[in-house]
Image (tube, rainbow, N blue to C red; front, top):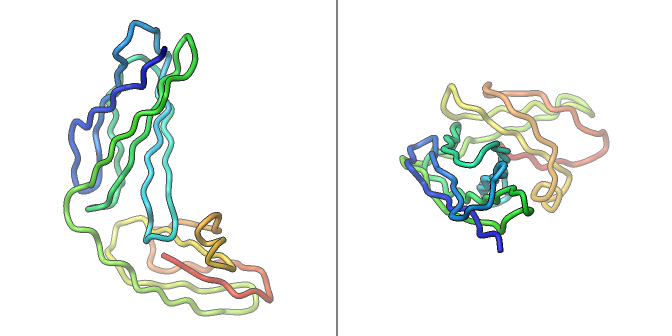
Length: 163
């Protein structure tokens, strides 16, 4: 039986988490697959996937949001197959930034100008869809460090926007 890997949180800060991965077995490990999940504004679950080569590993994941719960899951790739999943939960330090205040204005039938308030020097994600279900499951999205962006949309549709 292949055991799940051990995920140990080494440290965390406002914008990063460092963790180690190891196996408590003599089975040869060729690498790990790690998923980091978090929920954005209760509407959209985000995920970042890392593919890590080698038997032992210490990883640092940066560009995270302060005071946000993250779930880290990992499995090992071994000579006998994939291991079961391991999970660990971490809440980053600091104070969560205030939600931006979004304004969306139609420029014409296929373009919407989105602008918002918020801190400088951060990455913003803009999500948009024609229904709440689509906004949750598979929205269109783009990122920017600006405080405004023009989004191209289909004509004759109503859209929901989230930043």
